[in-house]
Length: 463
Image 1: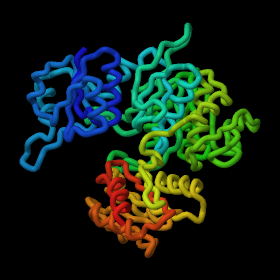
Image 2: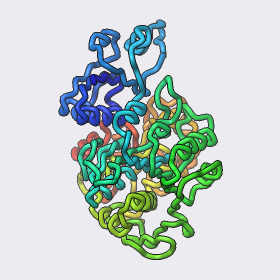
Image 3: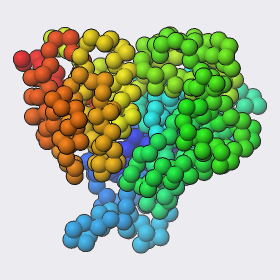
Image 4: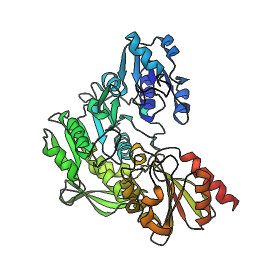
């Protein structure tokens, strides 16, 4: 069929476009501000991209419009529709669906879906699980909200299964809503046989009123797992205990806590995997941080459900190269290293800084450079947690442009350790002035951050 994707440059919709193209469909799409890297990836696949959401695109006459959740019925200040193409689709009675719905019906049907859900670590854990399966000859399909460096692509259909087995498909299972006409979490559409519940805390304040509202969506996911399925759950999270207490009809395997089915013994970069107290595997790899240790346990427990022994899974993780924008070194100048990381929620910021601290030791200085860019952070819902999230950093630099709340006031408990700037150029100058050889500059944002990484490297090279 010919599908036309509205909002094609997002990581999820771009991955869906790649899968549809690989499956032989004709794919076109549109977005506002068509931008790399997804635009380059899509054009390389021969997918035509159109700038904007003009109603003239109806002339393409696709068999189906696939609607991304960036699209809404919003109006501009003069009353004109913000998405004229969507209005035209509705007016014409043309066929349309959401991305998750299309994926469920045209890609996931008949496959053993392994879905990775959680507030933090979804992309990394999904990438770990896909690599474990790949390294053990299972040729999984996958859709990840990032680019796993072991694969170099964010999505693929995968190979055929052995006789009597379902083909495997690993998917990052997002709790964000599906579309303007379907406010359920995306993951409700995926019908997994193996579901990872990695962690759960309050996020997405723009669509969820409170933690209980998110727990309800997670329980909707639990309801879709068959009796022969497996739910892999973080044993350290009270919120997930409440989710399962609301009803569970599948096999459960826990990880993380001392009494869990899978637990660690040792430091995050080099540890034994204990299965019900017995050492069954050893993970030795280049990653650091307790969060990555927990991500590894989750991936190992999920892979075991489809027949990969923990020892084989651990060996594969020894070759795991992480995901782009996850503690990615962008360069070093004069002995000062600049990193890029996707962390944007206070808990993610804290665990990311902790991971770098374990890596560089107690004496090296960490300069945390961040922007509160997610919808939740822009609303100021979690501003009081920022000083806590930055405790392990020596200095913190906040980009406050576009915020509706006072970042200086929120960071006041940090005293002179925190600086705030409302534009990137001033921020770069403040960081460069403070930096000295041996420092580690950790940039954290879920956006492009105004190219701050290269600007820092350039400015450090001039001083």
